[in-house]
Image (cartoon, rainbow, N blue to C red):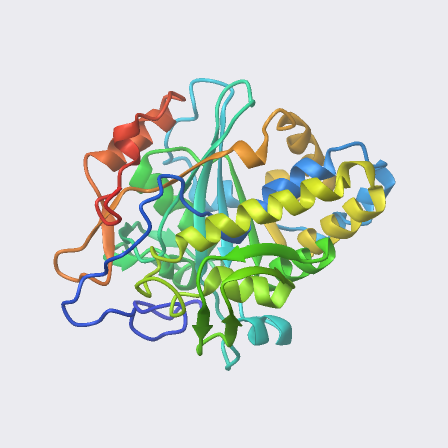
Length: 368
């Protein structure tokens, strides 16, 4: 799929499951929502700041790719937070560039990418806690007028699927779309692709998860029985991406698996005591940075490490996770839209660096 292709279906180009007028049911009611693979990037930033000798990092510097977000967005942006807090947009992309990513993404002659996972991570003043808001990829949004990397303009469009913005225009337009819908200023941008996630899990040595029910997903080839399983990188990727093998087959329905895997990943890292092992830390950091893209402000090990040190007081395992409150779209029950007034209340709290009310965490689409 080229970057200019209009994408209104699911990740693999097929319509989202549950066609016709049938509404999805059975999504998890958990308040804490899964954020999938990209939260591991933040974990790596914290690990990288944990006392490893700087010369180990210097060899990683060339791995990181930078995007000049500020230049692409210009001056028409929301105000920065009134405090020293920070907001990050973290994306997990399904890039198919390169043989390994094509294989992991399901094969096929696909050259483009979509933002398979997106979350706004808010780090309040004091940086002792964090809140992450995931944006479902099937959310219908208004894409603002954007400029591509080649300088050509792309007009605004209504009711486009959120995860299609990346493939249509690129990462800077994803940032602009999030800023327009939330009125929240995004200070930094991080992206990790399929291959980076696979290599990260393999570098850790696999992650053990307690599979809640038998999963037989013909689309991904994932075949697991209920109970504990230690998954390698390829299996982990299939696990967090499965939608046909569990629940109602919806994108919202698999969020519970993603959250479970994230906690298992964090537990695995903690059990290995990687902070005391520079060699292991370097191996994992190398796996992450090889597939890492950031804004220019973080696109070096020096900047990345400095930012990580500023976040040392944040425990990723205790990070509050919220799904953007959504409701099924009335015209297309296979898509969702931001639920009001919950969504506006949530974004307002982040803009003011304030505590998010419980009422702003309830999503009509999941019954939560």
